[in-house]
Image (cartoon, rainbow, N blue to C red):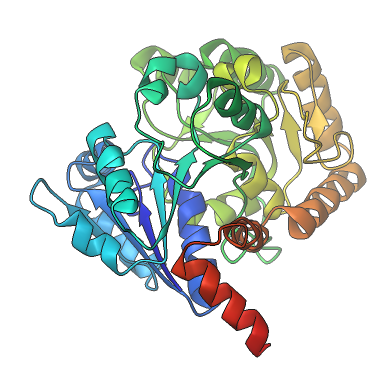
Length: 376
């Protein structure tokens, strides 16, 4: 089968966590013998910032880390209809330009033989509702929403024909334990600043507990303003800036514990949706402590796969206990890894995607799936 993914960027993961997931999905599709290609705008915000921050070497790094993946940049004169003509399944990410979202929908309505899905992995459906409401989604066969609360939002608003929950997950070909790597630090937190969406949370759950305990702590991520960098420095935390996603498993392996600090819009308006870093951290077998969020879909086993804390004081206490109790830390890491491998890898999500595609009866994708089943 031929999959075409319209992405914000596949090449750049600079402040762009969805690239992690899409890379894993494409790698899994290709491992199963399917063709998977990506398209991204030539002026993608994430890629432009990666180039400004790291230079061309970061793009070359992507090609070395993921040689099986390809992404083509498109500009104003790109022939999208020609690109769509050879596809069986087209998945369009919600950061795609609205005019292009509509254009792809028209191509589907005017005889396109592909199954067309819209993929939403952000909080704009509740924080900037008009942005999503104005999109022309009536010609899309279905919506892939990265959490049940987001799916319900689409259903209530009447956006799209059918809406499916399709959580993000860990690419466990990349994210896995590295027991051969020795520990050099206590705590690592990998996360971007996030438009002041978790400023207070970073202060109370990360900076203050780390300072109080005198931890050897490292922070990686981008878009930290000067005041935040000063606060990290004054608390004794080491700031390393951007980290290539391919380097994250080794960063986890070098530290004894990590944490999950969700952004406020997800906690308040879209409960049940963790950041992709939570899936990836647990896949690497590192003990994890999380700031509050509601696991309303029972994705994990709180208290067994990871620890919840209510505030900064409890984070300080839990960090102290975990760092002084290797047996508890080991049990927590093993349990979290078990849950990821059982439920939350990109293999699981590709299985879910094919189950969704089987529900459509008017595309080459569905017919090919049926023929494959007969051949089996």
